[in-house]
Image (cartoon, rainbow over all chains, first blue to last red; front, side, top):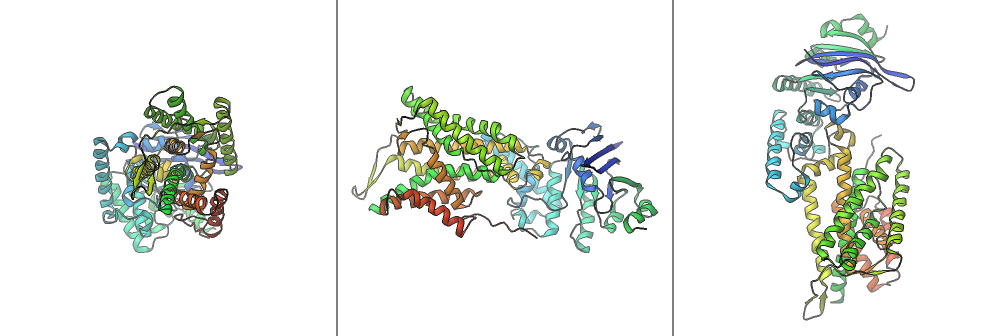
Length: 252
Length: 293
């Protein structure tokens, strides 16, 4: 059964159809790539899926639940988490606290309990720290837990964004250009990380990427977007050899 | 001994400024707006204590508790009614609205309590402390003010660094969009910030009125503006900055009253603002923002 089902999704800004009749079916546990030339509408699709933009029409169904019309917080709680093309960590918080922000809704104690340091506050904070440290260990960030997020090197900031997104306990993880700005070694390591996250957390992952080596290396299926429309979709190797796709990227 | 006594008075007045400046700086940090109605919340807090203690004759403790509750509710209500609809509006529209709310509160005070000054009964009943064979005389209010401010400051730092709600506040102040996508409720976090800021303003209100016991509808305006200067002085958006800025401003004000001229002391305080804006616009602890081009 498809974990994510998207039908007829469209949005226009002024006269521009940024995303036009977009459809997508992702199976549970799949590593799915969304590619396309610059300005094709890939990040707009992410913004539609996470409720940052409201679609003009179309439906989004996650794990059998209708997400259309829900706001960003509700969609996050239903189970979609994301990272950003330009890293958007909370730079004044520690690495550990960034992950703990992701855990915000799964652990509860009232503000009053926090101010008075009642037992439930201490217990909950301890559980949160343990859970956050587990996630950091997965990404090899446990030693840097107390660093300010802004002091991490670039590659590790990208990993921390993934850890923070996973902390919200999603069913679907959206990665927006995870390899942007990385050198080939970092990209290779990132590919391992992404596969590892999929296997370890049984996660379904949808990623936007320009690095064709990464896409060809880890994505099982692809959708190609061009001028807001789906140009091609299917098995990765078939899509990458599709003449239409090659034309879209390289021109006639 | 005169100097030390002035210094202590300055720290005490500065503590009040610091408590008010915390409200300014936290709201600025999270909502990116200057809440110029913040000072008038102090006045409402003062009148609440006055009504309960002097008019109704109930205990000062009840008066203080009621004052904190009234100001907290007022702060949250002002945010919901006046500022929240303007979340997407230009900063100038929000600023003008805040000034409007400030005048609204002052005139509401005028309407209910009239312009005639009320004598405020101090909520602090600790007697003066004499040190160095009576040469140094510290009033109970002064001492209580300083201690209260330090306790609140420590509690607030702890709250922001160590609790979920505090982390959410930092996250929202840095990047509302990313916080939303992590499932943080931005609206309730902003409400919480206004609640804390206004609660602290209430505390500042009854401490200030205990030290300077006349209460008029304009009581909050001047300390409010000075606390704003303190927040800018320390670096607006920074919580330790508000504390340091408040204390320094209090000391500057009292020392200039003592050694230069009591008429000029306010002018000197605002001179500080002008100098800070000229020399280090980001304040003592403020961070410079480098924009990448």
